Each structure stands twice: as C-alpha cells, then as structure tokens.
Length: 122
Image 1 (cartoon, helix red, strand yellow):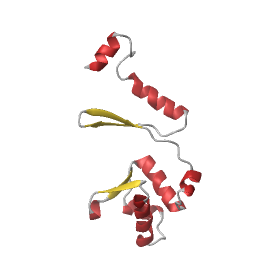
Image 2: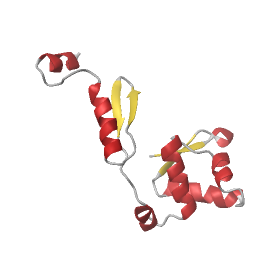
Image 3: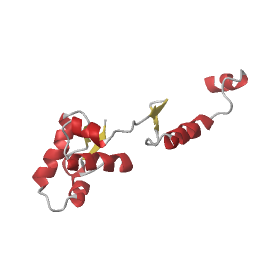
Image 4: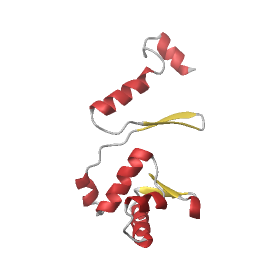
C-alpha cells in the first residue's frame, strides 16, 4: 500500500487524518463539506464550491430552481415529490419543467426510472 510508504518517509503524518483536515477547512471557509466515495477501487473526494444566488441568477435560474439546488446540496438528491412538497401550490408540470431545465443546463442529472427517479448535482 502506497500510503504506508508515504508514512515511513514522513510524507504523511498519519493515515486518514487528511479527511478530517479537509472537512475542517471546508467549514472554516464556509463551503459545503466534501463528499467521500469509494468508486471501483479508488477513493474519490468531491469538493463543492460556494455558489451564490447571484451566480445562479446569472445562469438564468428562477427562485424555485435555486431552492431545488440548495435542497440537493443538503440532502444529496431530490425527487419530484420532495420538490412538490416545497412548492405545494404549483402544478406538477411547472415543477417538472424547473427540474428538467436544470438537467438541460448541465446542473443536475436525472437517475432512476419513472416513479423511482430522482435528481442529483452533476
């Protein structure tokens, strides 16, 4: 294992402590905590920048779409049903168009099929 060799040559202090440092830095810089995944034998760390409402508006997003993104950043995904619960007074079609618009802009990806579908940030 390469990490052991790095430890022996004093290139790293201790195995695994860097993940805590990354989380601490993200909190200090007021950005979302990174996402850690094990993907086909690799350890993948994804950092999320702090995107502002101004940035979203520059992309042409409406307030509902911005709320959907904020929801996903907190909960990792959103379903049509969850989006309707946030905006109960709007039609399903309006909300579906909002989510599909985010997919077309390359911000979200739709996963699953019909009733089990959900949206995640790309």
